[in-house]
Length: 221
Image (cartoon, rainbow, N blue to C red; front, side):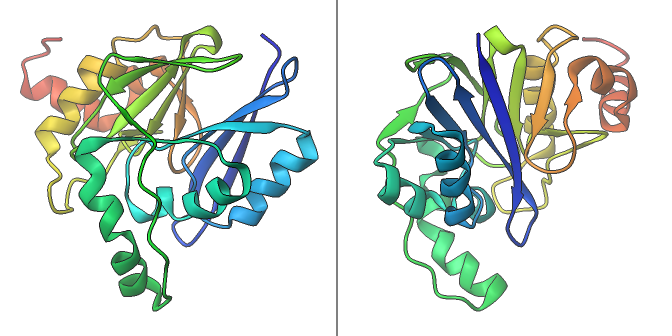
């Protein structure tokens, strides 16, 4: 598959977004739209790619702030899990609270993703895995043909997503990691919402949160 992945780190929270472009069809998918829509659009234009989908792992403000600008410019449909709709609606208030800036509401999703479903695009296919805990409707997108898991803020290099937010839950997050991400093969890349990319093998063997959770469970799993 002639696939190219561009990672951009944008916005106040230094959030990663991923633009996946297929060189044969010149179509692209955007996973998370943190901020600075013009930078995302310039990357698409420079590569000569047509955006055909905006996939959000979850609806915290730093992952959806640029959805409106990107969608208005490209017409690409927006994908999100229904359980994160309240967070999406709260995005302008949260941006105002954190930065003092006024923000237009994010567009409503065109497609509500569901656990275990497959998203089919002209040159890419993603499995949707439900990975709540950081937010109620967090999902991870698995590109099996490229052996990549786009984990959003579920799993990081050496760390995990925060669970000190309203409606977050540590136990739920750890079960998501074990059931939905660590069940993938060791050679899968983990493309995280913040920080560096990692692998399933690296996190399985070196992540202290995973080691601690295993110890609590008596080494089972």
